[in-house]
Image 1 (cartoon, one colour):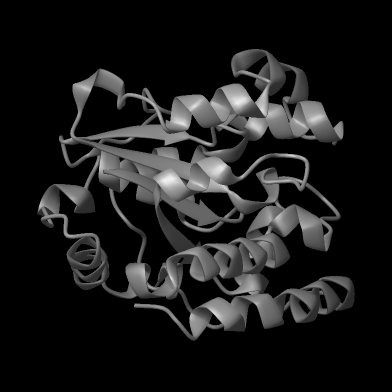
Image 2 (tube, rainbow, N blue to C red; image 1 turned 180 degrees about the vertical axis):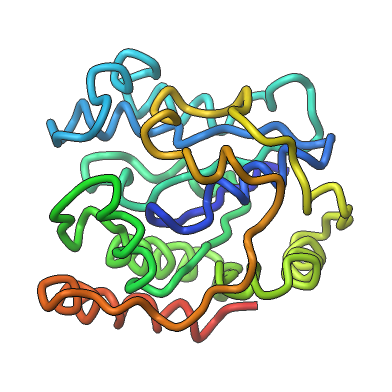
Length: 238
């Protein structure tokens, strides 16, 4: 099974990648379209040159890799994808060959985390609108809503949430998904030193989240812009 987990940034996505990699029967890939996205858009991101040099820049090449043989001969392959990487110029036909799941987190939490790493994000930077668009496209092709799981639910009860997700994927749950060694991982993208400091200190999912963060006015406006897309998917969560 090739599992494509679609989220925006700062969304528990790296911890989820570690959880699936810890199973022992699952290869894992970290944002395979990141370099192609930066090369196509010219956006200024941390470690931009290193990212572009680290991966194929042609989205067609990346798509062929994502639908090709599973790395290391593993029976399953977890692909961590960012929704904002799927710009309109990229052919999305490859997505039909994947089992697609959507990982959501309240935009206020995403923004509060994102601005610690990259200032002044825009709506397109945090991926909510693109996530809803991609969700609707896949739902139209399937004839039903694809799977949605909430980062808040995972942190509130990792075993229960991952058990539900694995059951929906017809994948046996294993408690190996709840723990991983601290430090960098072989599947990390080259950008890990900038973005993954906290998750590298972790050995499992963090405790449940508290109240929503109190954001300054400009980020509250950004939150309000992202909320319709977030609620659209939240209505379908496991």
